[in-house]
Length: 148
Length: 397
Image (cartoon, rainbow over all chains, first blue to last red; front, side, top):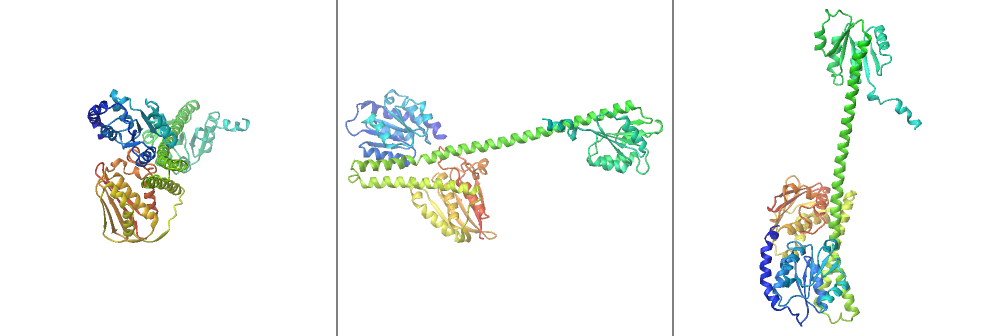
């Protein structure tokens, strides 16, 4: 619980650090499209990274919401989509979304929810939802629709 | 309903009040029977104090009409005896006496437990009125007992219902955890297979990075192993439930099993950046099921790694007193609150949320059952944030 209570101050710090970078370079990169995967299960994270890299995407990964912010901050341009798990220990997908949407400049990044619980994803204004277990075709067609 | 009619005509035995009349003179008893002829209770007669005491001790009476002057055991002695028996200690006693009121020892009567004195010749109306009071009291008491019994039955039923509901809730939660645990490995497994199929169909397999392909296969195989572990846990639990967990016993060196389990975990331990110290004080050899003992060690070591916060873990093997082997696992992790310490050995139970720690919540249950089947015992020393030590004692034979 401790990590959750101290999180808001961390999140603000993260946001204020990476926002100028993102705002400065909002035009899409002409290089390979970058996708951010936020997923606590290492095998899922790694396999999604492999299959998306095989499709020619650049992939960065994070094991929870806070790590996701770190990765966003480190990127020189915003990702073309974020694949987001909801139920994660540490900073959950819902909290990540709260902080992502706290600022106008990050609300435009397409969010693809990846969850076994479609019910819990319903209330979220996501760009798309992919049900777990994930099918390759669905994953690629969804990602391509935002990044292709 | 006609066949059931008899049940309605005969009220239940408990509500049929009975009066015990005690007199050494048969004619007096006959007179009483006549007086109570049309009353709604049964009159039981006794011709001596001894007979009355036996009758009162063997069934319930609404009241006893007791003659004072009787040869042998007189009314007072009979009353004392009736009072001394557990069943009849509260049965109301009405003394009936032919002695003139001023000569009668009423005090002695009340001391021995009488509730009233009646003088012969008896006034039938008064007699009937008084006896009826006790009959009504008796019926009221029986009804109260019946209500109390019903209440007790109902509260027992409610307790059972609560227990069953708790059981259902625990099982529902288990099903939701189990479906999550079974679902999670499917994503990487199916992504790997579909990706390989796609590469082959698009004839890109040969040109793909072999390191990447190997990693994907290894990850997928890891998920197959993960699913196998879950399934074998489920199989174990259903075997335990059916009382059919077979043990294949032979000579086993506990220290050797501990060494091999620690080696098995070497890679995982390295990845976690954790330190596991194996201290072998003795090499106890017992007659055990080697595979099951190994399972106990694997479960306890993986728990220590899972909940140990990456801090050093100590595994110690030694001979305990009275022909027992002992292996203990000491971690410095999140620990277990005293309130949860018994519960975690139950089926489907865990002390922490499944969101933060995976697993079915069956590991300790199975571990405990295996140890129990070997007539051993598991002790736990722990506290919240104080780490946990699981101590397993196994009889050598």
